[in-house]
Image (tube, rainbow, N blue to C red):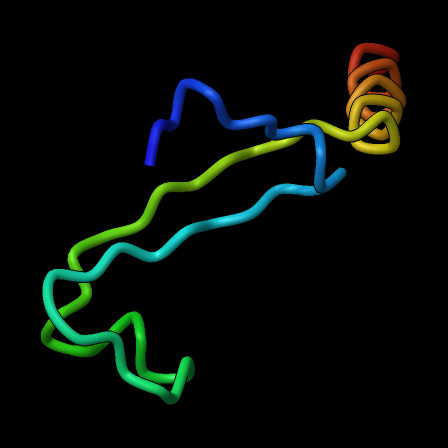
Length: 64
């Protein structure tokens, strides 16, 4: 997988891709604690709603 060609805005939301060394369990509920789980690649996509909420919060905090 070439992470440099990843279009993180295509999905419109943040996501994670779990990485395994060996077999991947069928039950996704145990992926993060199984012996073959090696880590994850996380992609954070900022949303406009989050930016507006942060701006509102920072203005409210600066008014104190």
